[in-house]
Length: 376
Image (cartoon, rainbow, N blue to C red):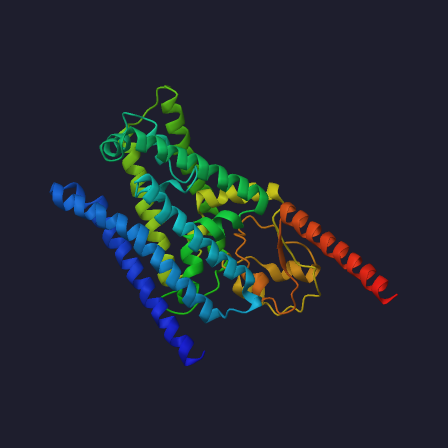
């Protein structure tokens, strides 16, 4: 690696360390100390948390996207990765800057992950829940209503986008939790040691964890839905909310950060409950990695680049499409393929490409006729 790129990589690693340290520090202050602190201190912590999560995070995404593009190279080969980064920058501006300024709600980004990832929107529908009681003085009834409308709109955008463009739409374009970090900081991950291929035994363990995590998320979702419908259930509302907070802080925040430090950027994506649901929906969209555009040269670059440890090469050898549930549609394999054998596809994208191809052919035919007439 050139000295300039080495310097840029060091800067990227430093920013990721700063991001991780601040994440842990602010989460500890907000979820722990703030509840026991004075009103003035609690207010300061909350404001600092909002400023960090919205403005500083967006700044990090912009700077680190630029650094990552410089490190991996801004050639046509990295088309899909460049689109990923542009998508995350736009999403950050909308979710972290524009929407909070318009609505006056600095916590909107918590409502950009559809069910079953979090039951926060359901809790906001219950006037007796601790979350509703804590947000009402801050947001007001109009603020709570606008937040729920924002959530519904974002939910529809994610679901419809997945039906049209597959899991790539959320996981590699819009996700401002783990998806953005895995793309924006990709060259710097892991922070400690070298990049490692995920072993098959680890993949099997993560496979089991994925379905356990989904089952737990669905349990909480169903619990709140039944509770809102007035069906008597065992369990205390406050206890259920606390358990969910602990799960978020441990299995989602801290474990995701651990993966960035010592493992891979997409570690959490292996068992993200929302990712699993969107993976199933992407089957309906016809999401696949086509492996028959040219003859595969078996260089194994696709397997080495895949953050989800999918064996793409074995499919490419046979010319069979990759339709793995783990695929997040990041396009790393497509960009890195020297033979241009691979391409990302859904039924909607196929239709768009075919339409564009027909238009180009029709345009070529018309131009040819005009040229012949002019020659005569």
